[in-house]
Image 1 (cartoon, rainbow, N blue to C red):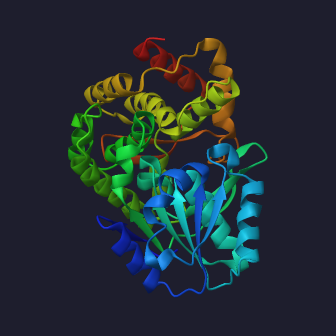
Image 2 (image 1 turned 180 degrees about the horizontal axis):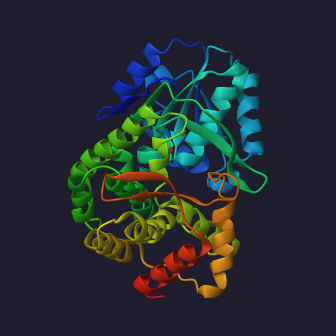
Image 3 (image 1 turned 180 degrees about the vertical axis):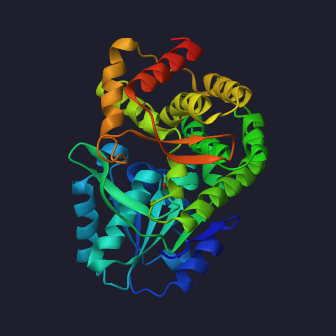
Length: 353
Ligand code: GLY
């Protein structure tokens, strides 16, 4: 996979123009969803170099990250002169960058694409690292390929209009990046004021967070080893997210990751010696900023089942990424059912549910 060109943009028009000019193409396409078409496309559609671009819009939210929306994008590319030399710009959150990246990677055996993520979650995670795909057969990201964007343009001005929930959702992935990086990064994230956001400071934190992810992806683009570090908090987090969805109390992805971090840092404390004090401080931060997702012991079996079926596992063994301390990554850690139930006990006790 090619290294990604990640640009922290202060001047969207100039930076995007440079990218578009440097990537030879015949036809230009822009993919939005219904939300970014309304809120973000007007900010760029009058750029002279986008005048001839054909705009494609799909439904917003994860439920549209499906085969129908993908077919719609392929159809638009095909019916509006798309060739192997066309360029697709994805303007949106992780749903748009994932689906658009996959549409581009498969159309005519692959055309170039550029990501302009508009949510914090997409800036620090989804749009970087070349994971593309769609949900299929009731399973998240079941179909997809690794293929990096020609460029990723991070324009943090978009964050100023993002709602508080989506800021916190993306921030959970940043906290995860801090935990797998260095104590200084973790400490800075723990001290950031999410109630009264200093956007200049947030921009610097975003740049640092993306650099952490990018370093890991460069080392292991296809997730054979160290990239699994990025799954910290996600084994338990995905199970909580699936439970929430099944019970009709859907939560934002990053919130589930934050609660998953509570679980997996406990497991790290028990299994790999993660310091109790760092665990306590991180749990308090998560409790204060993400609240609590309540469940009781009758849901343990179901949560365990969800963890068993996580596609990152091999042969039914539940695979965790744990930490010895901040930055000391231990991939491929296994826990048995008893330990997992204890982990869920800890979550309920410490979160007060
Ligand atoms: N979202 C985790 C990864 O890109 O590997």
